[in-house]
Amino acid sequence: MAAGWARIRGRLREEVGEVEYRTWLRQMTLAGIEGEDAVILLPTRFLRDWVNSHYGDRLRVLWHAEEPSVRRIDIRVSATPVAEPALAGVEERPQAEAAGQPAGLAEPLAPRLEPRSTPESRSDWVVPLEARFTFDTFVVGKPNEFAHACARRVSEKPASPGFNPLFLYGGVGLGKTHLMHATAWAIRAHDPQRTVAYMSAEKFMYRFIAALRSQNTMEFKETLRAVDVLMIDDLQFLIGKDNTQEEFFHTFNALVDQGKQIIVSSDKSPSDLAGIEDRLRTRLGCGMVADIHATTYELRLSILQAKAAAAQVLVPPKVLELLANKITANVRELEGALNRLVAHANLFGRPITIDGAHEVLHDVLRAHEKRVSIEEIQRKVADHYNIRLTDMSSARRARNVARPRQVAMYLAKQLTQRSLPEIGRRFGNRDHTTVMHAVSRVAELMAADAGFAEDVTLLRKMLET
Image 1 (tube, rainbow, N blue to C red):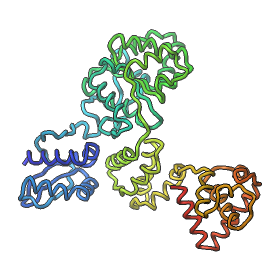
Image 2: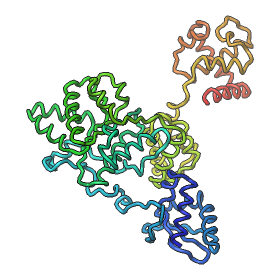
Image 3: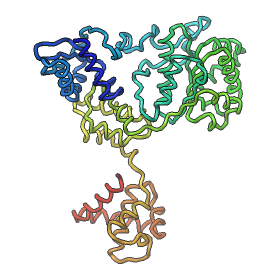
Image 4: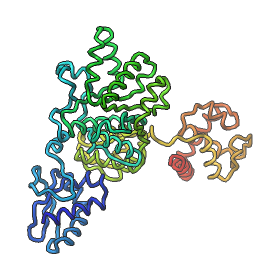
């Protein structure tokens, strides 16, 4: 039975992919066979309902193929699943990780420095690590798979040739900090005795300045150079800070010469960091440089699915698709939008719906609406009413030209951030009062004529999408 269950889980992993398997199916345990039922346990009602509705039929087919006497799947909730034998080819979660803490870490949050740094001063030196930022919670996709692979390699073999330093770069909210925290946790998991110091570039600078003021720079140097792994986040903060850059350069050289690992993140690649000394820039670029690109729709959707599963909240797929389509800037904003939806649903006891998402996130969704240019509006309206594009800025006043021009002015006011005088200039240097009249006239006609209103609404939707 255990071997059959291992094969079934292996098939599912191959069919749905690693991300989806880890998100929804990894926590399944087999309780046993009861008559014609295969009894499967999951830790929460949310996971039970999701797995039952999305994978129940497939589980039944796979079980029946493995054991013909099994005709049904009975998925139950059990906070303490029945222990089952380790399944070949199936990665199981260590007990520490299941409790909310990455496996292999004896200390909850603070990375460890050498004994010379006292417990009282340790928290002043380093930034506590986020327990939720691990490799298991990092959703991998095309835009970040190379950076993720590099971080994994460094966590397993710190200071290996070609990977020291490791330089991660990318835009805001794309996962650089998550990867750095995950790397720190994994390094400690592989070797709890290894010393890791993680801090922001700003923290590094403030500590250096404090050491200068207290004339205690030797202790500063000795403390940092005693660590096995030094991680500096947001290195771009050191731009223009010449003295701090010089100290970082010497610390960098001392650690690399000792075979210690350096990991750095920034918003730009080393070659694009204007304001950083050339000698430091070349040293930063001599190891492994890995970029994180802007997220794709598929990656954003996978991230949302993982976040919803972690929160144990049932979010309709259409709502997740809406967020993944509309919020494209960064992952932090995406997660923030999901958190708002979940909080609103919990506070008011309402299910999450498409209409509710539009209502709760109206400001966020509006901010991410496609920016439309006046030229696009003129072209679309001219095509719709079958007039020439040049008529938008001509002096012609015939009704078949004047009305479409007024509609285009109205849409320009509604869909762009341009001022009335600027809109007027784009329509043949017309006065801003002409634009005001066009906007009010179109609004009046829409209220009085349903057919005209439908025409204008259709044009607006076409431009917005």
